[in-house]
Length: 215
Image (cartoon, rainbow, N blue to C red):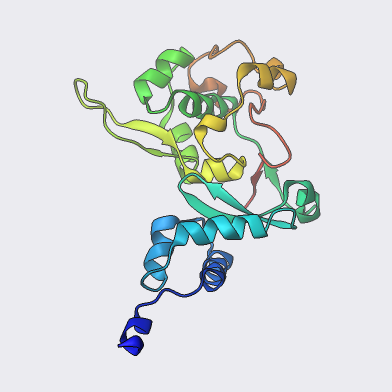
């Protein structure tokens, strides 16, 4: 009887920590709790293992960080300078893409028509496609309005890129002004049609980690 029961006993928490550590270390993208739970043996508690592992990595060169609903190992913020490569080609987003991304981030879920209404100009398909290709935005639920237009929301990739746990952690207007970012942006959503696509290179979210690596 004891032998049969032992077959269903969950591994010790330290063993579960090692399992979670191994999965996250080998994963190319953040892994959700549900995915971790599905990979681990019966009786394991992925959330408890994550919590214990997070404490274990505090103050280390690598941190266990929550990205939306998933988890991943990330370099400690104060050591990010060690990861820079001078050979990386930096491409900045156009002003139209920056404004569109900002509107989606702060107003999600938002439709294309709503984005255009806020900007005061049209949004080209190329702008939306660029943000989709970067995996910074994705399609959200359709709105229960005439025509049921699709909405856009930011992705976990966007949150991961800017070191945010959720969209609620986006900086407010006071923080943007204090960082000197808001002053660099022209009056909200002005300009001609998508002719401003390549006009100006202001980056609302510009920092050491906000540039897009070239191919």
